Length: 379
Image 1 (tube, rainbow, N blue to C red):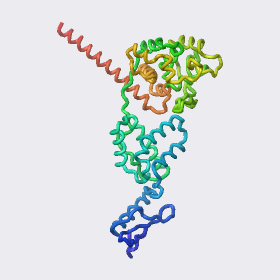
Image 2 (cartoon, rainbow, N blue to C red):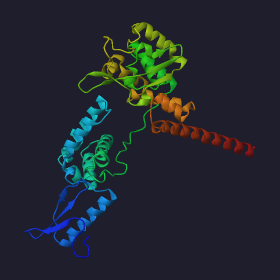
Image 3 (cartoon, one colour):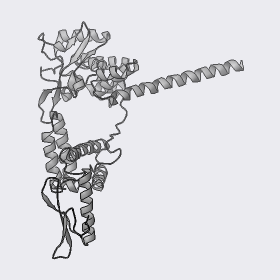
Image 4 (cartoon, rainbow, N blue to C red):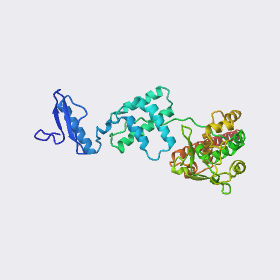
């Protein structure tokens, strides 16, 4: 803003040989910055300086030179330097970045990204046949990268990822088996070594990577409990790698129902070495159990077809176990502990489903009472 003698107290404006006006101003870093663009009139240039000064006063100013780094370079560094990412997560993030983000936005400077660009990018993904689920994953990754650019690196003043609902995957409701169906499916496994695996994964609410990483010492048949301390992850290159569970809450001790103890006892005696660190579930040749080998050796698809359950995923066993636990009246804290979740969100889904089912029961009872009362009144 100019002072009484016509000179600005912040920055300065000069007229270029082209007739346009250029601004220069001191930044919080003590360096003199030149405006990224020029202006047709001195008034426009003056307004630009006033806006920049206001941004500095409010703490919203970002160095435009720092925002010149291309998104592809910044995002690759973000993945590489992010602490605590598991190998499988790194693979997923890298694939999402290179397949769905870099081709469209990779060469754009971080400081030039706008909300409109992000909307167009997401619309194009969906228009080109990318699933809603994959688009949501890519959007969440991009939003996280740019949030770091805002909050930690101060490259931009505001995150341009502001599409409401774009992070939702809208995954369809997964099937829930009855207790009888779980035991029937376990009995239909072509290789008996997988009967206990199906039962334990269901009734202990275990993820695939958790159940195949169990050791003999993980199972206490007297308690009876199972301890989850690690998981096995199959990387894209085929390597099987032991790593910590998905979250801190993933390390847990889970009580298991006595009804599956006979199957576990039989399995441990028939298929597991006596050493405490011996893996409980391995393939026929004694190697780590992989998803593809399990489905082939167990004849998973055949068993599902015979039961009319085509499309059931192994993860649906955990989903079934979670649902049964919620239906037992478990508290939110108990569900979180059993499922191995840090946040309330997933556990609340199961509690909500249980409340819906309970309401349907109440509604049915109300209808029956009303029918009986109406019958009595007519009599």
